Length: 464
Image 1 (tube, helix red, strand yellow):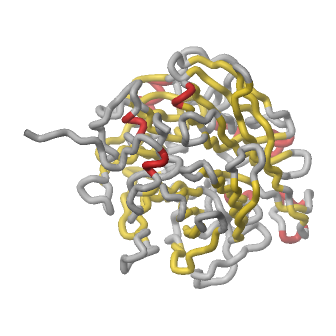
Image 2 (cartoon, one colour):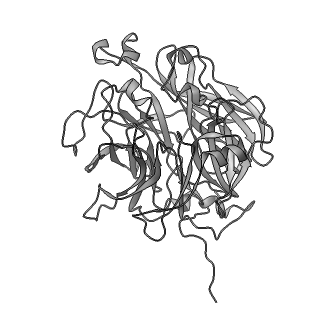
Image 3 (cartoon, helix red, strand yellow):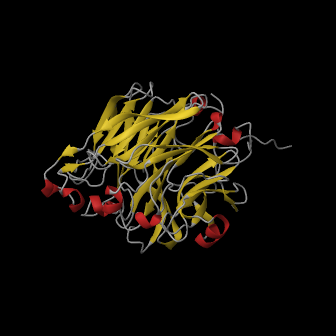
């Protein structure tokens, strides 16, 4: 008699996930900014013992052009072991890949051949719009009872944006997640505290305000996202909104503590209208409410206007543009991508209210165009953007493109894609792996990275 056993890549606790075997493959979303040829999921060899280490070893093209592949995820993960909605016999087998521009949702099976995922289903934008009222799919997370998808607007390109659910076995769209939306209108990222039955959501803008690029009048008018929202995860109702203030624009990536007994997390704010700085904030429980505190300020750097794109010339400075953050599995190190200056920062956040800078590298950047020890040519453009951390916290991978319509506003010469890897010391400190520089094939730009078997932003846990 066969016995069912849980997927070996599922772990009940983050502490156990840190002991997982080292990843050998990375899956990377790659998109054509001209929307002429199909986007793809590229497979990168990240096994140092392999002869093809640091190179693309497989690629799955999407069925049509114009998807703008973005923040994809898994059909199932460690949250399947949670006691409130257990599905221990699900498998981490399918990549769930949304098109931010096309609003299509693709399902790729990696089990038969992990280097050549196979598309097994595509849900068209019309079906999603009909069943949910949503459009412009942004982020995928596997929850205890299904696949959660965030969407940035409605089919007309207006608000509200929100979240819908997809069945993780049949891949059928179930419907809109929110029962009571409250004041929430704008959407972007979402995550949760399973131990506190709380969902957290952040804000960018409606599709009409970003699909042609950032609109200066909207930005300077403080009309992009500036709030963070807290929800009852079980009742699907809005509980609380915190407004960071109108000088803070573009409240992006959310990274809650992995430890389910800890009720705090980090959110990055792309830009301050006051001084072009970026900031990191810690949200936390205060009595019976949620509160938030700014814990890191990253200043803009003065620059010669001649070296700046038209959008920034008048400011005579390079903004850091914190566009992604990621938290190590032990909740100790926070990685912060500064896409404008070209810096990747590592902070010790053992005390989440007093981060300490413990490491920093520079690559690309609007003005610095810093190179890499493994790059064949000198000046590099783009900057640290989508960042992913191995489960043991020792390897950090990142790519350099933000969004097709926004890239040329800050890098008018066009972005030549690359992917790099950092090695992290046990007690902090980061350095480039000189043997790992993926010079991305022309015609595509790389975006989100997912690691085989899971990573630090793919899974949530119910046990400390």
